[in-house]
Amino acid sequence: MGFQFLKPILSFLNERGILMGILVAGCLLCSPVNLRAEQVAVIVKKDGPLTHLSKVDIRGIYLGEIRFSGGMPIRPVQYAEGHVKDVFLLGVVGLTSKDYKLYWVKKLFQEGLTPPIVKGDPAEIIGAVHEDPWTIGYVPKEFINGSPDVQIIYIIEDVQP
Image (cartoon, rainbow, N blue to C red; front, side, top):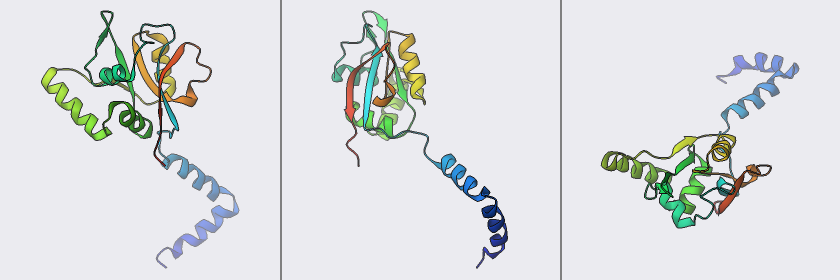
C-alpha cells in the first residue's frame, strides 16, 4: 500500500530484465565476504622449519606464548573475522573470536605483544606462507590444491551445521 508508487518502476525494470540483474548484484554485494569451510587447514612452507608443529604448538603460537623457533621469530597470520577464523579459534585455540580479541588486548597492554597479522584472502595467506618459511597461517582446505610450496600440518573439522 505504501509502496504502490514503485509498481510502474518495477514493472519497467522487470520488462527489461534489469530487475533480476539488480537483485542478483544486491545479493552478491550483501553476502558475507568470509567463506564457509568444512575443513580449515593450518599451513606452513613445505620443507620449512615449522613442519613439525603440533596442535599445542600452533595454539601457543597464536596465543603469543611461542614466538621463536630455532632463534627465528615465527610470524603467525590469521584470517579476517568470520566463519573460517571462528572454526580455527574454537578448534585449535579453544576461544571464541570475542574472547580471543580480549585476550590480545590484555597481551598488548600487559606484555606489549601484538596479535597475529590479519589477511582476509586465502591467496594472501598462502602467498605469505610461500614467501617466508617462518610464517604460519590457516585457510579453507580447498584453497590448498595447486599450492606445491605449502604443507598442511593440521586440519580442523567444522562441526557447526
